[in-house]
Length: 146
Image (tube, rainbow, N blue to C red; front, side, top):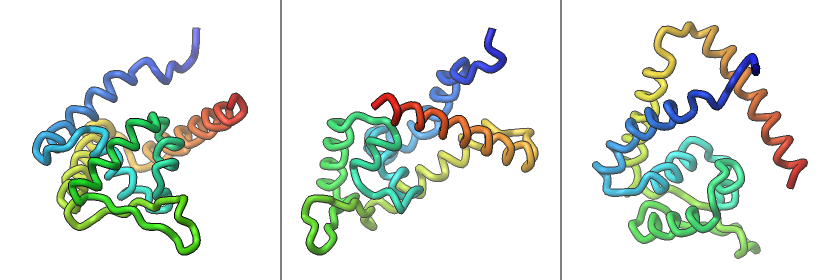
């Protein structure tokens, strides 16, 4: 018997998150993948390429690519290139996406409030440190296996 089963409640957590952000997707007329990409870029400004999204979020390249294209067509994202490097596109959030991002962040806050209700700041910090270590172990293993 495992002393800790980190995946035991993952579907419930995913379901709660989907409920929180699903309202925003409907309100803004965007898909969950599109909102996830906008929020990833907004919350992680140092990771601004489609490759970053694929590698860090473990999403499929084709889904990210098609969602980025749709976000560009809507005027929510634009690609920028560094001088001398036309190969790597850096994704920038446009002003047209500002309200969707703000709504998405509010939904993320709501999700965290529900999930962490009753935990002290110290407990949350300890949980964060442990989760960071677990993620580090997971990423190290995935790199070794690649």
